[in-house]
Each structure stands twice: as structure tokens, then as C-alpha cells.
Image (tube, rainbow, N blue to C red; front, side, top):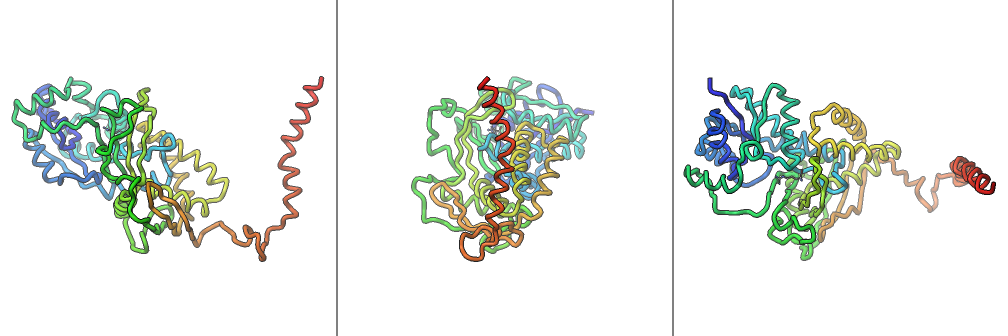
Length: 401
Ligand code: ARG
């Protein structure tokens, strides 16, 4: 029987050419797998037809946008995950959901190998292949750009020679990856890290320098999950989309960073994640009133480690699973409303309320009704400083000898 390969298919030039390229290089039949993670653009049916037109023997398409929002974006939100303090893991969280569908398609169509369009220099190859190793350890992996010398020029020549139903003229100088959680742009002119991004780079956000009137929004959460916007019930997917629209119109969530890739390269990235950044900001502020101090401090460390694991392609790893359990436990009381103003590139919280809040007005107030016994502070401070005071006494004693 002819060997079969499932290919992660985006509908773009490189993966369209990869269908025939892999076929010629290996003699295998190629099954194209397209997964909708809310990237917008063409319909799955259009992509399906193109895959078949480019020589795929089958095309598997999946609308995974709700699955992606519920099972990948929501955990990222609960973790307040920002890799290196900036990046909300846009591409990193989409790879594991695509991997799930690749493995599912491989089983359905009897494939032995999984192919993807990544280069050998990025994180995404790692995320795909480590994910495959975990969910389908018997499956082999192949990357035509990395392993079968499929360069851009060769891809264009191949598409023209074979008359593939794909445009080869539109030359985008950037490498772009996008989904409902955000958009990542890299390479080209951006590789000079002193170059400011030009306007044409952005798509999810309007220029924050010329914002429309301020937009006040109330986001309601239930156990860490966004459930309503301005009192209207929403699914996580709807919440992200609605905030992409409203925060995007105000230029919220533009990020320009040089980040550390897993493969050891520092690389310049432009991200725009208006919905994700507005949600993370709101969620963090709700945690500030609902999560106990020590739990909150520890959670910040856990969230950072979680972000690194996910960035590094360890979505399906045991440690990530354990950290998920911790994070989930912290979310029990993260319910309530956050009001924020979206304006000129910023999402600024100006009100919060929760039935499960730990904020105690009577303890906090400096006005009448104060229930905090200030006389206890003096003794507390004496003991709190004791250890450092003893050490300091020793330092002075030793220095004096
Ligand atoms: N540097 C980011 C990451 O590793 C974004 C990668 C985007 N991928 C792309 N093909 N442009 O998560």
C-alpha cells in the first residue's frame, strides 16, 4: 500500500507546493489538514478545494475555533501567561491543537507520517514534533522546507511549472502567523531591530496615536473564565473576538520585542493581541481582589514557568499538566466584574466588584468604621524585622574586629 502523509496545510504558497513536493520526494500520498483556529481569511471549503487542486488525495478540515478558545486560550488567560513578560503565546498555543487534529487525521486516513511547513530555525517545528511524539509516538515527522530543500524560489517555480491553483506573485516580505488569540509578524525589514514597524504590518489593531472616543467595557468572569461583556453572555471565543474588535480599534495590545527562541536565536517579533491583552489585564485585576496574597505571589512564578513550558513546546508534558492543576485550583473564587477603559493603546481598569472578594472595606478604610487594630502593628514589625536585625548586629560585630 502507498504510504500516506498528513500535512499541516494553511492554504498558502509553501504548504500548497509542499503537497506535490512531498509526493515527488517520497512517493507518498498526501492528505492536507487545515485547522481553523480563528485566523480569519478564506473559508475552510476554499482551502479544502485548493488542497485537492494541488494534488492532495484527501483534505481534512476542522473548525477548531471554539476548541482553541476553550482549551488553549482560556488556560493561557488563567495563567496570565506572557513569555518573557510580553508575549501572550499566540503561535505557541495553536500548535498543540493543530497537532491533535493532525494525529486524528493520521489515524482516520491511515497515515504513518506527519508533515509541517516550518523552517529549521524556529520554535514551531519543535512544538509540532514534540506534540506528535507525545500524542502519536509511532508517527514520523517530516518538514519539507527543512528536510527536503523546499525554498521560496523553488516553491514559486514549482507552482508555476505545475500550474497549481495558488497565487505566486503576491510577495509578502513578512512571515505571519495569526489566530483568534493574536497575530505574529517577523522577518524582512523587522530583522534590523532599530527599524520601527511600519503601519502596513498591523492588521488586528488601529493606530493608537489617533484613537476614537474612549470605550468603557465591563468584563465578567466566572472561576477565571470570561462569561459576559457589558452584561451580555458570551462564550470564550465570543469574548476574545469582541475584545479583538473593541480593544483593536483603540490600538490596544501592540507588542514589539526581541525574544529568546528555544533554538538559541534572539529574534525580533511584532505581535498584536488586543483581545488577549485586554482579557489578561482584566483577569489579573480580578485575581488581585479574589486570590489570597501568598497564593497570588506563588501563582505569578507558576504562570511564568507555565509560559516557558508552552513556549518551548511542552504543552503535553507532565510538568505543564501539574501546573495546570495548581492554576485551576487558584481560579475557584476568580469571579466578578472588571470595568476598564480602552483608549489610545491602553486598557486601564477603573472598577472591580466580586461576591468572592477578599477586599475588606472596614479593614482598609482610614475613615470611621475602621476595624483594623493599629496597636498590633508595632509588635508585628518588631518580630518581622528580628531576623535581619540579629544578622545586622553580627555584621557590625565582625566588621569591628
Ligand atoms: N516567535 C513566535 C513564537 O515562536 C511567533 C512565531 C510565528 N510563526 C511564524 N511562522 N511567523 O511563538
